[in-house]
Image (tube, rainbow, N blue to C red; front, side, top):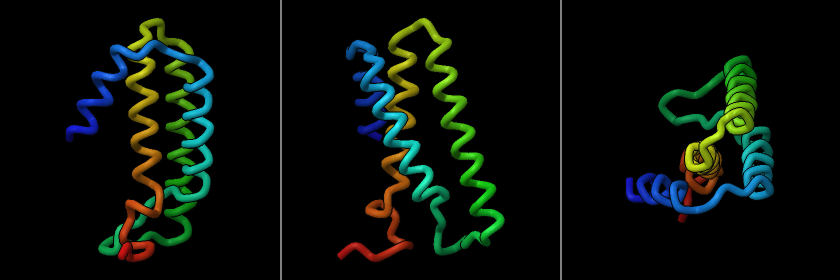
Length: 103
């Protein structure tokens, strides 16, 4: 929770930078292509669901990029960017114990 609040505050006070924004979305796009969707051990996904959810994740990323390009308020752009970055980082296997156990 503290991480979410700190990202929200940081988005208000850190100036918007197009290069950093493009870099973040590129990294998150690669993460989504490689690791999305994240399965849970209580609800495994079949191949059709994996493909469908991967496409949905990519479409949501494209919509987020479009929203950032059309908005005029910089701290809202930063909030969207930090939210997408946080969601992309959570998809990494280091945060997902069902792929492999972390010792």
